[in-house]
Image (cartoon, rainbow, N blue to C red; front, side, top):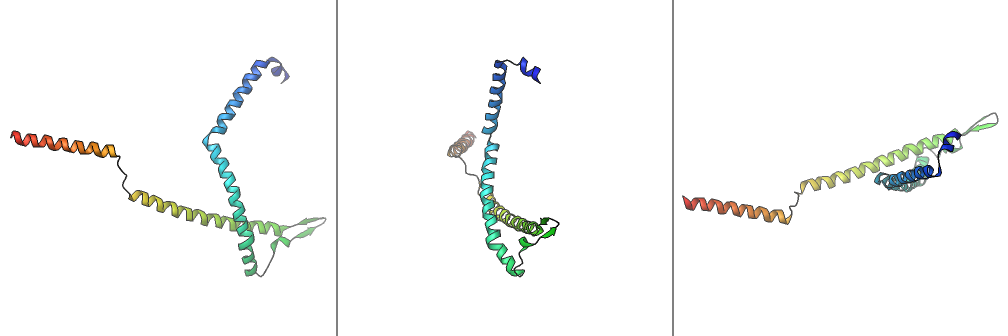
Length: 153
């Protein structure tokens, strides 16, 4: 490894680092990376909303339904170690509730999107004014050509 480093001169190192920086800039500037960053930020904010729905609204209702059982306090002591399997059970329940909420949210968004697509598909595409004018000119020229043929006969 040292032999390779010794053979590289300062100019080659500068050239390679400039190329790497250039590639990194083009990678960051791509739309996909920016879209992904926005998605992650919005996803984390949405995750907080869903967690609040689960923790503050749904779980208390489930607690009342199942008689106030709190899974987080369930644990087993094995020697010196304490295995808190109740927290694991609670996390599984939280996951399932969050998955159901996200599923419902996606279904609602799909319905709204489909309705918009159906409305857009029903509306005929609007023609440009120049195209309409050109079609009128074409039709007038055809009429004029047909009327000349009839007068010649």
